[in-house]
Amino acid sequence: MVRVYVSIGSNIDPAHHVRRALTDLRADFGELVVSPVYASTAVGFDGNDFLNLVVGLDTDDTPEGVAARLRAIEDANGRVRGPERYAARTLDLDALTYGDRIVRSGRLVLPRNEITRYAFVLRPLADIAGDHVHPELGRTYADLWAAFDASDQSLEVVSLGSEAP
Image (cartoon, rainbow, N blue to C red):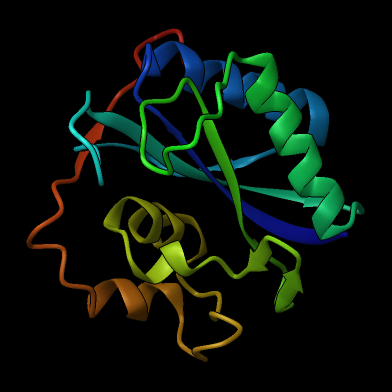
């Protein structure tokens, strides 16, 4: 078994889709370690705010198999893929890490570069895996977060409400 950390984001009916993502991920992978949920502004386009969080899950699947399973969950939740990289979405699931492995397989790159670029990825990852070490940088996620300049990225802890799974 390997621990995989997955980012979850949504800005179309986000509370509903984040709850659905948690339910679907539990059904597919089992028990999850779940970070707090954060609200953040859209990056790269004008749009509704996103809800973001990170979950940890354990799997025997390959990195490519995990990516395919995440894509299937996105599709089942109405994800529409267009030519724009930055756009509104019902659900965005991205594997961030695959244990301590460095993976370069076609479009699949792990650990993802977004870990060190976006507060809405690094903060929730540091919340649940702060003592884990980034396999390329050799620093813990807590250390990376402590050194991160989030002054231009809004981030606020929010609740999904009583319906959260």
